[in-house]
Amino acid sequence: MTLILGVDPGLQRTGWGIISSRSNQLSFIACGVVKTDNTLPLAERIKQLHDGLLDAIVRYKPEEAAVEETFVNMNGASTLKLGQARGGILLTLSLSGLSVCEYSANMVKKSVVGAGHAGKNQVGMMVKMLLPASDATKFKTGGADAADALAVAICHAHHRVANQLKAKVLT
Image (cartoon, rainbow, N blue to C red; front, side, top):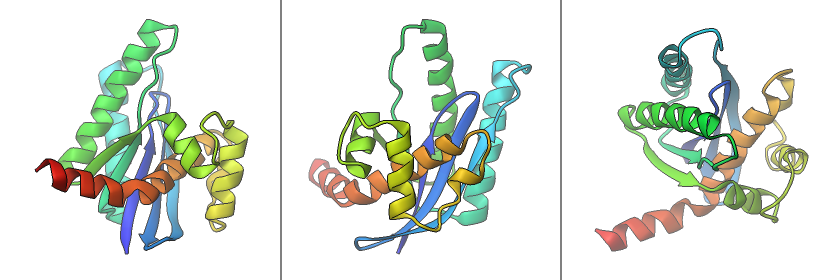
């Protein structure tokens, strides 16, 4: 059994979800949302993301992590801030000793829903079907972020063996 941490990065809200993967069986462990205070300077907000994710890592002790890749949007300043938040998140995961894989949003959606351009509602419904014990919907703000993080973890569970084989070939 492998515990996988999935992360849906964001500067305002970062969703996280932990699943266990044994062969092709997936089980829900936990999920949550790290929210930052937008009145604080960027460095302090990134520290809030670090502290929140580190708390989940210490509490649940995942063995692997997966993060959704950033897409570039029209607002360059927003994209840059998201990239900085992602950098802080990747550093937190790496310093915690986790191997980290990254997946595009389309890959996550295709792995969970079967279509790369699925909507958030479709992703949330499939996460609930695949992980019936999931409580991502309990969050009034950020439930979609927690569900998306679980989707990233599911995607990693489906692709982790191929990634490990690829890594062995490269070394």
